[in-house]
Image (tube, rainbow, N blue to C red; front, side, top):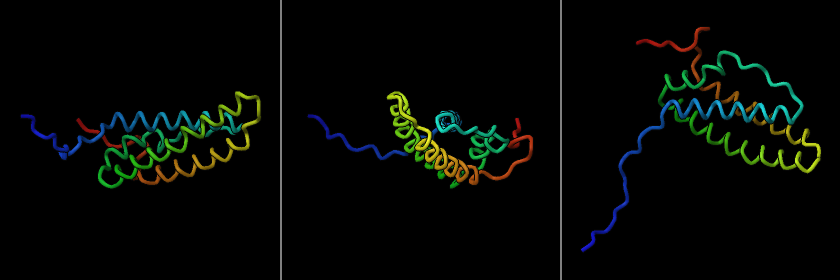
Length: 129
């Protein structure tokens, strides 16, 4: 006879740091696209932005958990927002005003995420072999 299939309650493996880095990079790229549509010059990323994924991975714990959740939320905001802006632009309409609104939301969310990472020196997070 067939045995019933029970739900799997085993702990899920943690996402890799590569995934976090890729997510962060994708969000920055999407933000740059929004800035372009808004007619705003995006700032060059500083050390905190460049080293965010490594710094937050090193911090671990609650900071890493909040950063993962924040990146998911940011993606949930940017993906449909950017799609809508591109649809408006494709129809020949000006998307600058809504793009500026999305840009402002993006910057606030990024600043909140960056605040999660502990401050590191100018050389980035400490790495040892």
